[in-house]
Length: 360
Image (cartoon, rainbow, N blue to C red; front, side, top):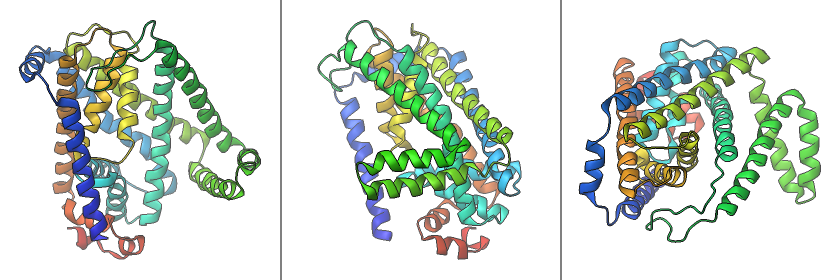
């Protein structure tokens, strides 16, 4: 286990180093610094304030899940979430989600397995908000001419027809995902029959595997005591992702960019997709890649220096509140991130056997 943990660390650092080299090789740093110096401070402060607001809307979203199955205070949910965020930004393999479950189980005495299920279901409601943002992106973003990315990313123009076709296909897929989620909650048996029939044509083994996953997913959805609780959780997911869109709009305005209304949706979607995969500590390189690509394809005439400056500054603005809130919660709850990482990297039995004192 220790060897695998360090392998994840090495691979994550190597990925981050490669992406930083790939994105910033040959950069005119004087021009990038000049772009940062010209930002409008008021918009930056607004973006920073909105990031803090998302911390509370996330907890409100999660509260309808946690309180449906057990009892937890706002403080305990806030601490678990912020320490989990800190873990995602400092530990390899996106283990912060497991850290969140460990912290919640220690602070509330909810079993680890139940805490982990609550975290997983929160990711599902989070996904619904992201799907909504992506739907707006793929429907609204219909470029009239070919897209030209910075040469170090991709040398050839991307045909506008290809983007429009891909966007339409993505929109259909995302709508199908939303429809499947609704159907799975309202008519689980029908979805399972359709899944078995369609996937059974390809592979019986695949059909059985997906059947099991869908059953587990449906059971998770039914943690909600009522459709009203689910609706409220999804509502706060939509609010949270709307705030992310506003954050990127504020950052673009801070850099004095003239951008179409859908550009913040595209940037939000691009960053979220890139960050979905486990990668580098602090998402160094990954975050910058998503933002630079999203901004480059959606903001006409954007200079590569402005794109890089925006990626660097936005990453710092995102990291600052996560570190502040995460460290504060560690001190507040008298916990240690290294111990949490050690416990989170062990098997479930070890987690459930550890007493509270082992992470203090």
